Image (cartoon, rainbow, N blue to C red; front, top):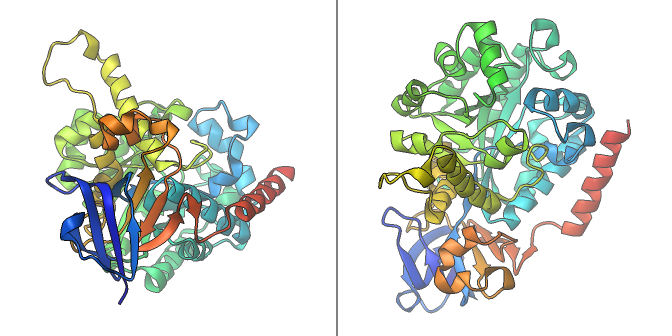
Length: 461
């Protein structure tokens, strides 16, 4: 039995009452929170004590959509100024050269970046497996680094020869995909509270898999009680593809292949109408909002205000590091807030005297990044700082130049409004992943060098 005492922090719990405790702390036992409250009311001793005077402490952020392997193809010149479909066509041939070592290294790079931004749980979508690569390579890398991982067994089976978007060289046979999906669930999926690894089944997108694979994946996922994930309604190109190929808009297509329910969440979901938002709400589907990626690829702005008003669970995702070029989840919280305000501006906020028209607040954006993400992933053990939940949190020193002034007025809002930098502490299950601004579980300099070497090799062929 090990205990950890955190004291004297400005603590934002993000619980249902949105409690904030100016001189607060946590008492943690074996990775779970045993007490939350004012420092004076917590035990005075523990196996380890951390005084966080002058720091703001928040629940660990939850990343609901990523492609770790894409860290290796950031800022590729030919893909810098392309829309989604052309961006994919440019990068597919490069990704076809990935090796198991590349998957391992890129996973650690992405997770290290996420940890330095306050993320404690990440969902990744790996959907191509060239040259002997397996999801196992990612899972091993994740366990070494120490963040909670929802590892998605993605897939592509609909190649160019069958009317799909990806080249046939990066697709797999559907019987192989389903067999490997079942193997991974049986070997790695842990549904218990506090689990470090969960498996998700995630056919890539409507334009890269068949309807039959979507249906069979849904059956398999529900047999084992695991979640389902895919890209949906990201661009207008996809909308036209679905209408021509399947005779449905993207959301209608999901209904036709049994992909609606509380065990399903979709990435992006930019191009949806009011009726389709109602479908998500009725069936409790979740949405992974990826503002930076949508901006980078000029895909559009997702209707987040409408989703939230309808009761749809919304989390945040940094998306692939080749369509964001970073894995900074706290920056994504800020981006979500700002982009929501841009959308309000486009729809006439500045000319409206309607009191119901309100801008997204910093605390609402933080809620999306933690509580929203936990709900999307179907986890009730993370997302807030409460008794019985996982001891997952991050802390930021308020006495630094980039927070000067803001930290005095509102320390919680300051971490969103002020340009986010690296966090000072990230803790997962009571274990330090970042301590005093430095990664604990991996050598950052060695990892960057290894990653750059792999990226050069990919582009040199």
